[in-house]
Image (tube, rainbow, N blue to C red):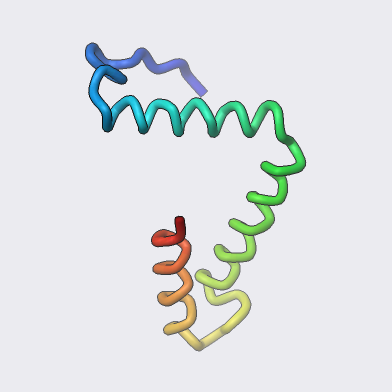
Length: 74
C-alpha cells in the first residue's frame, strides 16, 4: 500500500475531520486490537457469504436485504 498525501485543507472542516478521525481509528483498531479486528473480519465475511448467495443460494432477496442492512448499520 502506498502512502497518500492528504490534500490541502483536509481535516480543517467538520466533515473531513470526522472522516479522518474514523480513518485513524480504523488503523488504530487494526494495529492495537487484533482480536476485535479479527471478529469484525469474521462478521464481514459472514455478510459477504450471505450477499454472494453462498448461504441462501437462489434466495436473492435475502442477499439484497442483508447488503442493505450491512451498509445501513450504525
